Each structure stands twice: as C-alpha cells, then as structure tokens.
Amino acid sequence: MRFSAFIESELDEIVTEWGAFARTMLPSAKTMSELALRNHGRDILLAIAKDMETSQSEDQRSAKSKGAEPVLGAPETAAATHGVLRQLAGFDVLQLVGEFRAMRASVLALWRHRQGDDQATRAIEEIARFNEGIDQALAESVERYSAGVEASRDMFLAVLGHDLRGPLSGINMSNKILSMPGLSEEAKLKAGLRIGRASQAMNHLITDLLEFTRTRLGSGIPIERSECDVRKVCEEALEAVRASYPEREFVQHFSGRLDVQADAPRLHQALSNLLNNAVQHGDRNSPIYFSAIGDDLAIVLKVSNAGKPLAASALQIIFEPLVQAPNATDEPHERSKTSLGLGLFIVREIVRGHGGEVTVQSSTEAGTVFTITLPRETETAAAPR
Image (tube, rainbow, N blue to C red; front, side):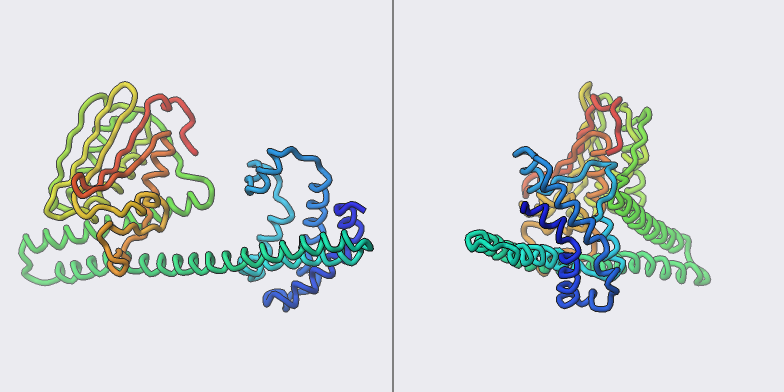
C-alpha cells in the first residue's frame, strides 16, 4: 500500500493516536476536549496525502523544501486555520511545533507496525529516527528563538515606557514653571520650547509605532504620488528639526532638478527621521550636513553626521525594526537602550514604496552618511509595495 493511501485508510486511528500523544506531551492540550484537540487533524492529513499523490517537478520540490510562500489570495489552509485556533487556545510556538511532531510520530509508528517486511520496517525506523533528530534540533532552535523574541518584546515595552515618560516629564515640569508668578519672558520662551520639543518627540514615537503596526499587518505604508517639490520638502523638514534643536548646526545644499512624482508628506516623514537620527547619534559639536541633488535620472538625498562610526555588523541590520545598532567603539553594556529602532525602518519602507533605495556608510573619516536615491523612471509605476 502506498504511504498516502495508508494515511487515508487509517485516518481515524492516526488522529486518535495523535490526539492521545499530544495530550500527554503538551500542557495546553490536557484541558482541551477531544473535539477541540483533534480539530483540523483530518483535513491536514488529507491535504498531505493529496499532495503526496500529486506529481511535482524538481523545481517544485526544491521550492517546497525552502518554504516557498503560498500564492497571494489563495484560500486559507486547514493548517493555517489550525494555527490561529491553537494561538487562541493558549498554545505557544514550542507547543504548536510539538503537536506536529506528535502527528508525524503517530503516522510513522502506525505505518511501521503495518509493515510485515523486515527490510521495509528497518527503512521506516531509520526515517523515523532521522525525523526525531531533525525535530529535536528544530525544537532547541525554536526555543532559543522564542526566548530571544520574548526578550526583544520586553525590551521594546521598556524602551517605549522610557521614551514616553521622558517627554511627559518635560511637559509636566514646563507646565509647573509656566504656572509660577512673575516668570520672565525668556523663561516662558524656554518652557514653551521644551513643551514643543517633547510634543514633537511623542508625535514621532506614536507615528513610527502606527507605521510599524501597519507594515506588520501586511498593508504596508501607502504611497500617494503627486507633483512634489523636493526642495520645499527638504526645507520644511529641516526647519522643523532646527526648531526643536536650535543649538545644533545644520549645513544644507540643494541643487539641480528637484521636482518629482512623489508622496510629499511621506518623504517629509522619512527625511525628518533621518535628521532626528543624525541629531541623536551625531557629535554635538559638529554640524549635520543635508543635501539634495537632482538630475534627469534620479534625486539623491544625503544626511551625514560626525561621531563614532557604526560597527560593520550594524550596517547589515540597521534598517530592520527594533534594532539598536551599536557604534564600532561601543562596549556591549554601553549600547543605547533608549530607542525603539523604528525610525530607520520607516525610512526604508517609505523609500521602497517610491521605488527607491536607502543605504548607509560609516567611517571615522567621513562619519555616518545615509543616502536616499529616488529614480525618476518609476514615477509612473505603481508605488505601493
């Protein structure tokens, strides 16, 4: 009997065996009903059996082994629905993986018992032992991965609380100062400036969180193109940052053809993030350079700051969300814990939405330079990713 035919003919016993095995191995399964425990088990196994009976090319087999993503718009599979329900039932990733380990072990055990030929039984036993080894390695890897995700999430919440508490404290303190009688105009101006800076910091934080959530939900950052004067966008972004950091020096240079089909508010957001990043991480005693140069092929925007160079390893991940990139000279205990690591991720997503590219270079001599390239050839193309 073919393996796929065996699965179909012994489906009820396999599912029963799987449910019993999962209940003994998984804490979350011990309190579930038989119906809930076995939900989608039959459909998952039938889908596997049907797939085994379908011919496939070497390319298809290779793609499947590499976890090729399903076609967009395809109906949700039983396995996908099963995963959602298990999450609602309180299963963690390790338990979900363990459940499928139990399913495979149950199928192979019953298949081995059905074989009368010693050679076939030995072959199945070897396959089962190999799968057990792979499963054990997978479980160990997933466990460590999950621990890392959990630690990252905890750090995210801690930094979020820190970043919100800082501006709120500044606003509260400035409010108390403004309520004092006989306050001078200079003191009022300083207090108002602190409130404005704190409000802008909170606005940047909340905006980045909303954009990050949008991308994680799969909708991406929407880009709405129209005629855009990049020079004006640059000047407005720079003016806003200067208002928040009047003590910092900025050097600007805008030249060439700077009109393009782009989403001006999104471009403003990306440039603001780069400028704020330069202020936060650059040398306070050195100017921040901001340039925009356009020609018939593209517009190139650069934001650079002096200071400690970024580590080579950081350059590979700096645009990923929730990344806190260390400087090349930083010790591990000196790395910043006060940044959500979303600003540069938002920059990358906005630039990609425009069909462009953002890169970074960092050295002791040249400082840290972020470069955005917006090609003109994509102006009529569909912008959203």
